[in-house]
Amino acid sequence: MHPMPNRVLLIAKRDYLQIIHSKAYLVGLILLPLLIGGGFLIVGQGSKGAAKEQRVAIIDHTGVVYSAVVQAFQESARRAMADTSFGPRVLPRFVFEEVKPEAEATSQLLALSDRVRQGELFLVLEIPSQALRPTDDPKQEPVRYYSNSTGMDQAVFLLPDAVNAGLRSVRLAQLGVDERRIPDALRDVTLVSMNLVTKDPATGTIAQGEKRNIVQAGAVPFFLVYLLIMVVLFGSAPQLGAVAEDKMQRVFEMLLGSASSFELMLGKVLAALGASLTSSTLYIIAGLAALAGMAMFGLAPLNVLPWFFVYLIADVAMLSAVGVALGSACGSPQDAQHLAFVLFIPTIIPLFLMTAVMQQPNGVLAATMSFIPPFTPVLMLMRQALPNGVPWWQPWVGLAGVIIWAIAVVWAAARIFRVGILSQGKVPKFSELAQWVARAG
Image (tube, rainbow, N blue to C red; front, side, top):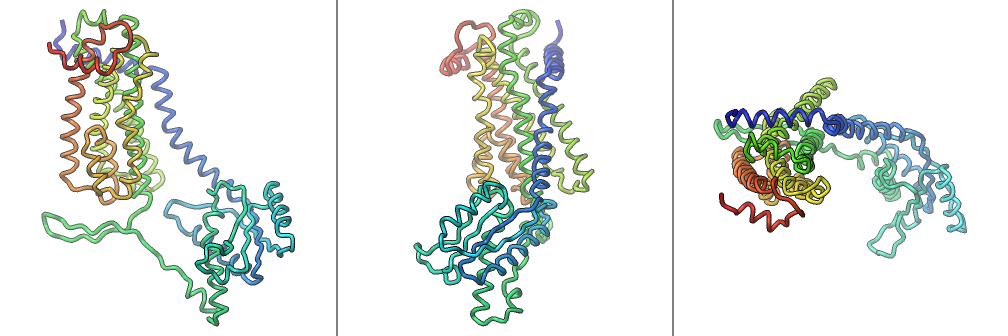
């Protein structure tokens, strides 16, 4: 009989080859980059499609602000095109149409709304006469716009600033301000996002914060964490059904003749870990190559990639062990599907916290939740990938907690697996699983 390490590796090799040769794994390996890349492609194509002409009709009840609003709108569009923080932007060609107010205001708005529905107009803007003399009276008539847009169009985003800028310029002119000086009076200043100033604890040198890249500050950490979650779930979740399938086909009864229950479980966990490392390595290499090809390699979070793989190993070990244990307690893959939510909880809960973490990465909530072992891989990685990082000791404390938790989970899963692979009948309750863990021997 082979020594224990050899038996575990043989079991892991068998399951690893079975996983990577399965259609589900190959489809998932291809599907994930297609989903991410396809999303960018759809957005890009949508932006190109948005470059068509969009007609905006303006009903100016003041009789004097139409030209100022159009000019302000065009200036806002020009600034938006010049802002490349999120990459090149494509805007529609806006065409404006002045509509004289009619006595039958409701009928006029109905006719213009019909033109929007027919695609002749994109938006109808109605500026009331009181707009030049705004007050705090809540009953004052507001500026209204009518459109069947979902609100995600560039024109809708530009509209509030453009309308207010146009109205302000007319008010200043009416107050006697030299018209030639109005653009200078209303010109915006440039705001630049900077990283925090830091001090080297060893040398005491103070380093000035560098200009923050918006993509690196938000998009890169998000997609790194997104990749971690997807790879962990794709690597761990299939174990639940696969183990239940092997149990139903009595595969374990044959394998138990040459290996212990712990060796069987450990082999399956190593197989899931190997499959996850294979896919994640391919994704990381492809992502780095893509960044290099776009001359954006500087955005690559090279300093946190080792931590990515450390958290990946810990997370997959924990969740695949749980999947193997729960699968062993089920009589069929159908029964196992009802327990899948247990594997999703450690990754779903951090998703709800990601916005708060990105806004305050070193806040009390973010720091506290990132030290809770089931959530540490996702939340601590997110905090580390953000521009200002975290204090040097926090990842190591979090890692220590993750390791202790992973050992405890694998130990508990092994005890459940030992009883579960030979149990028959209905799926046990969680109270019964707890009894299996507590059972001595």
